[in-house]
Amino acid sequence: MSVRFDGRVALVTGAGGGLGRSYALLLAQRGAKVVVNDLGGSKSGGGGDSRAADLVVQEIRASGGEAVPNYDSVEEGEKLVQSALNVYGRIDIVINNAGILRDKSFARLSEQDWDLVHRVHLRGAFKVSQAAWPHMKKINFGRIIMTSSVAGIFGNFGQANYSAAKLGLVGLSNTLAEEGARFGIHSNVIIPMAASRLTQDILPPEVFDALSPDHIAPIVAWLCHEDCEENGSIVEAAGGWAGRYRWQRSKGIVLTDQRTKMVSLENVKDGWEKVIDMSEHEYPDSTQGATMDVVARIQESMSSDPGHSSDEVSPLSAVGYTSKPVPFSYNFKDLIIYALGVGVSTKDKHGLRYLYENDEMFSALPTFGVIPAMSGLEDLVSGNIPGLDFHLANVLHGEQYMEILKPIPTSGRLENIFRIQDVLDKGSGMVLLIEVETRDENNELLMRNQNSIFVKGSGGFNGPRNSKHLTPVSTPPSRSPDKTLKHKTTVDQAALYRLSGDLNPLHIDPAFSAIGGFSSPILHGLCTYGIAVRHVIDGFCAGDPGAVREIKARFSKPVLPGQTVITEMWKDADKVLFSCQVQETGEKCLTGGWIRIQGFNNSKL
Image (cartoon, rainbow, N blue to C red; front, side, top):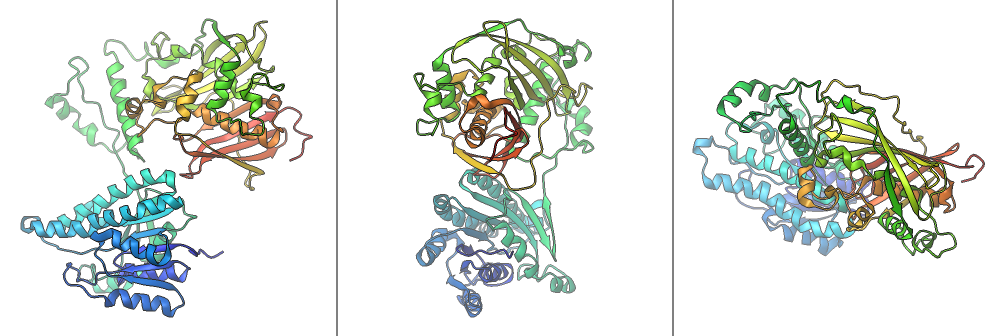
């Protein structure tokens, strides 16, 4: 099936020739309505001529496409975007392609040369993108392309102004990708090597002739398409070849002296080879990921005691630890607060079953079982368990399994005992496998939970990587889901869910979540878990929570409060397999999920 842009409106800056012209022609050929912007100036930014834009518009119209010209400077971004709104009523795609050169060696570079290049490349892209932003948010869709250069990545003699502006566009795009994801707005960077007026004097004639802009246009067009989920990437393209950049960083070393807790010049000198050693490189893919890794290493260094050997403090010594019995009491109010925390509404078909204590079918959601199982787990960060000493901000929930052996009462007094089944060494962190047994007032086993908890920055203790105790996740079939349901969380979802007992500040305190490497507080993974299980109950159990016997899922990516969770479900023998993704970003947040349902083999979809 051909890739089309019917109904989309694209604005291409600097589209009077070269790359911009190729972008405009291809998008129009594939059904987009195009605003062809070109000031018509020289490659150094002087002069102005409307003919460049007019000729491209004529080409598009002659081929049966729709286009209008625009002759404004990109520094007047509002005027460019308004041209699209006036004629077509919307703006879906912005390709920031306009550029000029003012090449001089750094010593001879004037402020005017610096400012003019930045005004066109960086300020121009900012102004045009910012003008389009609210209109893209309104339609919950947008595709923005920034045009960088290998000079921006690596530098280039005589192009200090151009290089700085081009790398600035990478930072701008990465931030727009982060801020726009929840609104369906994606931003990516193209690094093109093509024959244009800016490269005509730089490339050898034979290379210049081979590098047609028409080789680049399909790559840029794909990045602009609604089916392309790429966001926050840097893609280089030349002569039919394309590849993606990513940042690489050495593992590095903490240079703080253990005794003085300070960094000295001598420490830096002695440790410099490890600072620059790329043999153990890594690839941070976000500000949060990069920050969390560094913070974890600093905290690990601060908590280590040089007077003890690694054997004495090995996390492996925690294996087999069993807690004392921990009591847990609850009543109907706790069930209702939990149900509200995972998004149940009185408007739902079965809402009153979980929200009204006098409803004849009043029940506990099966995932309420994770709440009593949290009792006593604060001991994990107390420092009282041999071998375990880590900061709560570095704790992430990896996977969750639960087995329900008896119906969960609507009130009662329970007792929990947790034991550490295994401690796994994942290099960048460790995984704690914790089994929790919950017994009722008759001392009968009510349910089991298995928490898989990942602790950033706590690996490297020569422990095992796998465990026979870990309950496996599933692999969904390749066919389309049998059922799909969605739920939009509220901006206060995490604040509400934490009232059920998971008070980790990571989910409400911006300062604390920043320590963990997150730009804002994230939703509890177990909240998403509860939402997904509700979807399965509604989709396959006719609303009966008592049919659920076992649940397993992996927490892949965080959800931000206010985002929409989409659950895809497949019937598989006596199980329903499921996975969840965030609608606003397209990223999977729960994977490998499965739920075993009583008597499900004979049921029908």
